Length: 187
Ligand SMILES: [Cu+2]
Ligand SMILES: [Zn+2]
Image (cartoon, rainbow, N blue to C red; front, side):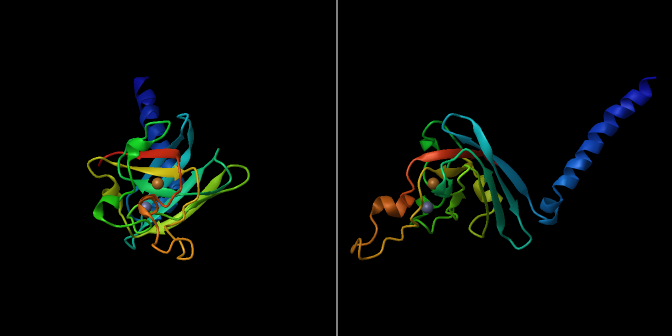
């Protein structure tokens, strides 16, 4: 009598695992490593996820699916430290690559902006060759960040600023406060 029960205990989890693998078959096709990053807002509530998967072309596909944000464009970067302490998320520090002397938007962690629809949801798929997943899972981890405002990519025309963008712009892209953050743990 014990044997069938034991078999159920093994067969059910295995079936569920196979089912799960089938659901994520697109990720399997990408042939590389992948991870999922849970995004939280300033109140500590989960607002969606960002999946990252390495492709066979040596690039990383970044796919964001989030909700509960203000409509419009939002700066979207990977920040240097994997700590998302609400409400301001300053614990995640600056953009990945900022300490290597590059300016925004040449940082390793700079990505295309998130366009949030009128219903507060956003979907973004961007491919980057600036990092791989191991780069993000370094000693202090990393954090995916959605900002409150739009990123100007340090594109400040000369007629506005003859001397070029200032320090703040070259560091951040002026996308303002931090609306949502997702921790990537050290590897
Ligand atoms: Cu940022
Ligand atoms: Zn940057």
